[in-house]
Length: 611
Image (tube, rainbow, N blue to C red; front, top):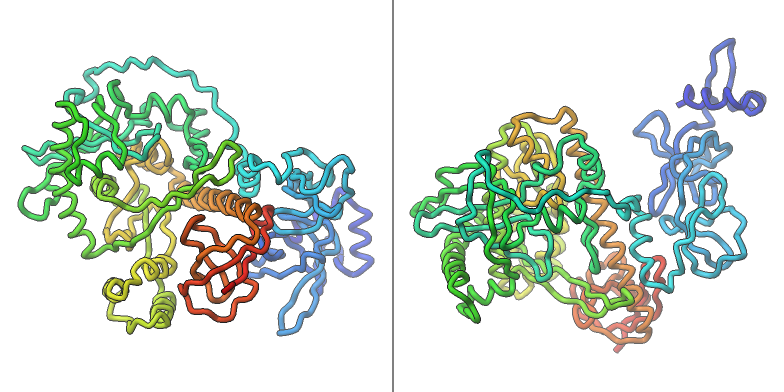
């Protein structure tokens, strides 16, 4: 790090002389050294603290925000060591040697620019043409406003805030893709499956149909057809670079920012009904007798023509024997789906002997024309969801097996013993007599069984999920603990996940990308970042709702006993608030709260227990 600093200082000889005269840097002939009382390093700013990263990568020295001088994330600095109580060193910035020029997202509050990411007050002169709660971009080098985004009062700004906070603002740019002929014909290179009655089953209103299924109930063959994105997105092309940078689609409550150009994601690659589409198909021959295992599989490029697109709700009605308003073609498909559901139910039952069934629910925010919350819909895993899930799992498992020992796998490690012990402790505090057993699976399933008998299954499942490690992508097959699979990958969603597109190419060419390890790490990081930016936007939407419902009384549950956080489970489901009068109420106990304040910029909702 010293050598890097000296290269910078060559352009500033007066500053170098000053550092030598102050005995910060020592010179002996042509050799330089840094006084042990000082550090040279790079600034790293997290949400709650700043750190100095030195050449010793294991050394991370804390810096108080008010000791940053004018330094910001990524800057190279000289800092002075400051002894701190509890035998810990901190640092204060003396000189900024190199500024990593960037745009800083700020809000204008009380005539000060305050960063949204870290709540740092920037030492910059405020331009008088801007007003309270304006959201701006500040150049980190000049400390001048580079862009006006809008005012926090306007809910349409939330999308921009989340994208800029997580450095994903480039997703607003589009790729000038020239759509090819939509009239796809079957040729000798592809298997013609246009005679099979495929269908898609997706959420209501979906436009990007990655997958279609057909079950030949007479011969017990499941066809899983996946959009053949690799036929359009050639490796290392400009379009591929565009997709790789995005790595995944972003699903906001009000819109989708697709990984691919809309002409592909919503049209050419989407397995829409009544048009020929290029597909990559798994033909899975199932054993009729022995737990419906895959006894033979074929993978090939094909052309399909989906006959119908169904919503999950429509298929749920079919599975509940409500066959309303159907024609002959739909009747044939419905009969096939009913038989397929019997098969996938048995496969699911067997899978859960090693994997886990978590009773999770998704809160779907529905926004009005002003992009504020209109209502929150609760989506649970229904029979139709489970049917499609099992079909996709079968294809994903088979793809991971076919790719060999090195490729792109979705891996998930089991929870640590420390987290498992914490789970046992938390569940015990709910009044359940549980203990850690010989292995992780038996421990978790035993806890679930006792929670189910005590009518606490939903709450306990949330605690179990909190103990889980993050699932990531890896070039090596390390298994998937949560699903209970020895081998697993992502094959079924190449329209919205770059990992699936990479896997398709590997299966087709039998070639592994040279940078596969870096690629796996990158996709994992971006996928996590996208999850966080979506949560950021949703939390800000909740804060907007709360700001308009001050003094509203709601029923909530304690979900964090350390921080006194509650979560509303009625009316505005999913809203979280921090209690200002928390007095040690038990985890998951129900309380009546009143909203006291809401800071939209920081997504901070304060409530008080009443009654």
